[in-house]
Picture 1 (cartoon, rainbow, N blue to C red):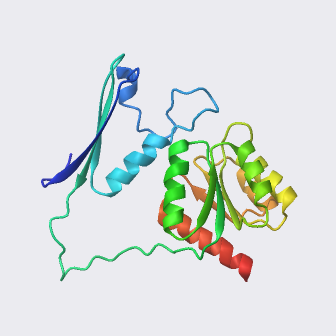
Picture 2 (cartoon, rainbow, N blue to C red):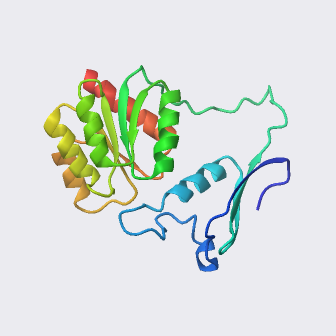
Picture 3 (cartoon, rainbow, N blue to C red):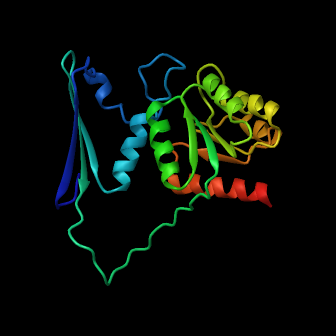
Length: 220
């Protein structure tokens, strides 16, 4: 339940097929998806829910099968700036103009992270298709300073994607994002010399720190 106070409401409505009642209670669960295997990770709404909760807000959904769905996001309104109680702000490390190739099969994750990374001072190529991302990499092989890739994707895994890009440029720094780790993953991480493993849902401050660590290590 929301705390007492003033909130900003953001409402998003569609006229799609709606969500069956049996799924409503589960749509914000990580990895829950009604898509076919390989077509989605089920992390999109979980990421949104986590962001809203982190800001002290709430997200509600109302849906009717055959009519559509309404999502309502409530975010607390800041009444005034308290001068004598300065909150400790978490420092997010900024980029220095480096170029990143970001790959994830979830369109929303790609769009949000591309925008945030650009705001931090990076140039970003992004794709939801690892096969297309390979072509982007080939066209910009010397310009790309770092690859960030999801582990589970259609057409090829993140590990296979890293192998492919490394075959074209052996010194390429990489960061792997994964929502679920399997036993053999740690061995693959070592074999492929993967600089960082980030757990999904990805927090921007953790990703920003990992990027700087990998890039600075490359320089040094």
